Length: 287
Image 1: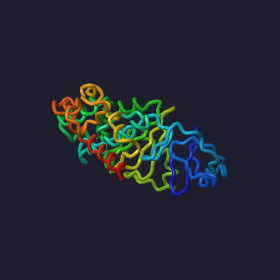
Image 2: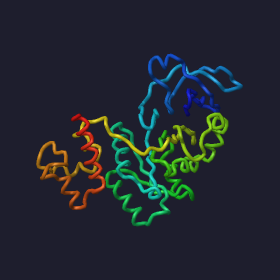
Image 3: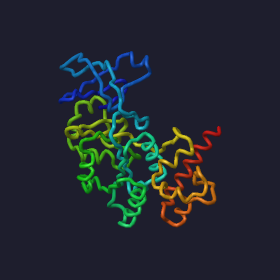
Image 4: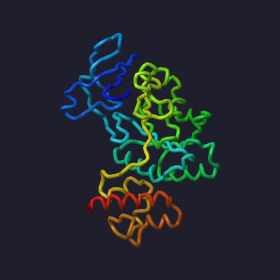
């Protein structure tokens, strides 16, 4: 459920959480348990709820940032304002998840602080790219019921910058989260308002949510520059209008994607972020 300072908090699948150490064999293999791992552990003291992790079972998937395993989907949370949404950062996260075949839902929180026009603008950019977008006001609970329904039956990682309301959403979805982990919260000194470590919460049967630390930057570096376009799914319908085979939609003169941006059919914000990431990948390979 959580790992901090060499201690790993393991839910036994029924009702108890055990504070465990990982066997030295993992260090020798240079692997360590991740939040979301299925593990086997031995109980050292039933009363004190302590144990040792003896095996990490095979992972369905593994993310580096946030460092979690075995997730079914990601919900990336940005504030509609306060702080202003960094769409470049959002697009980098989407590319990273797409490249690892992790389905993504987008949530813009603090909808009460923006005009209806701005809310529609943000929604339309990403719905046009094929993403499911939700607007919420976590403090009042508006939109939380829809979020709860799309989390049901899945393990979902909540990710996004600091200060956008991820922890507030977690507590709205599972009000008992703080209470259920009260004993380990005391041991690990979990901050009430700032998530410093990834933590898995049980919501209901077969439903788990991971609250993760906020991030302010993300680098896309696990692909070739020419592969990037496949992670901008809205480009696909305009590629047949490109004159050259293998067009990367940056320097070419006759390009269906660039024409669609000029005509306003494709989001200029999304295209500019694509171009920036493409240039980064190209320069990285050069050096």
